[in-house]
Image 1 (cartoon, rainbow, N blue to C red):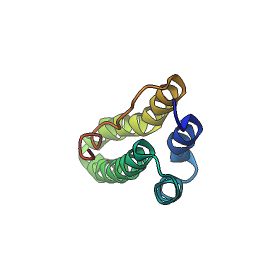
Image 2 (spheres, one colour; image 1 turned 180 degrees about the horizontal axis):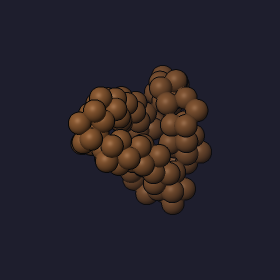
Image 3 (cartoon, one colour; image 1 turned 90 degrees about the horizontal axis):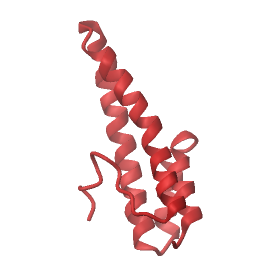
Length: 102
């Protein structure tokens, strides 16, 4: 259970500095797992912002409302799951982008 506090900070930064904290942790920390999670966190935020933006534009066609709700909940719940996994010492990969980074 190494760097548990850093992993919790990384996941919690979603709500206050979603790009800055992962970038700083990537540059400062030597642990490969924290670096991998930092990249995943930034990519996850970018994908979520893109999907939410697309959902907002699709509201015109009424398709975007369910997508906006689902992606909004996902952007809020996934970091909580990451925090719980970090506290328990389990490995965690972000959905959608977790398999992009090896």
